[in-house]
Amino acid sequence: MPGIRRPLRQRDTWQRQAILEAMADAPCHLTAEELHRRLRRRRRPIGLATVYRALGLFVQEGLVEPAHVGDGRVRYGLAARHHDHVVCLVCGAWRSINGCPVPAIPRRLAGFEITGHQLEMFGYCARCRSFLGRGRLVRDAQRSRQVGVPAR
Picture 1 (spheres, rainbow, N blue to C red):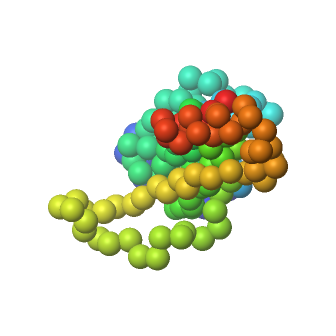
Picture 2: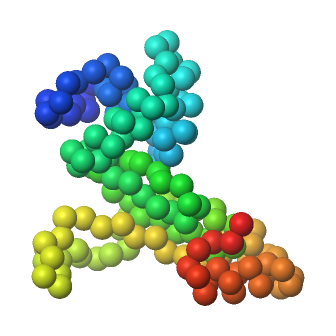
């Protein structure tokens, strides 16, 4: 995807360009490992360490934003493609939310200049809701709500 170009702050390599293109082709945020698996299928594979280094650089440059969606892994997506998530409190499954449910982001808030946001809403997926009447999942869901982390 030739439309995605980085500002030339650091050496622009074919690996970094390939990583950006793979992220642009992805429908949602990816972990570094998921991104690496996609890149291994290409003619010129890229190492996992290179993926991690490039993601760190892209986050610093503001091209990529990390997302923590409740499963304990960091996922990365292009900053220009902002979207929020809903996360199941029982199994940790997550989905992207189409459209931002926050109506208007203020430019300043509590003494901060606001540059962006991430929103994760928590609830119960359809599969887990069907089991909530059964003992263990109810206890797991209650414990998840108390500590704010999905039970696994």
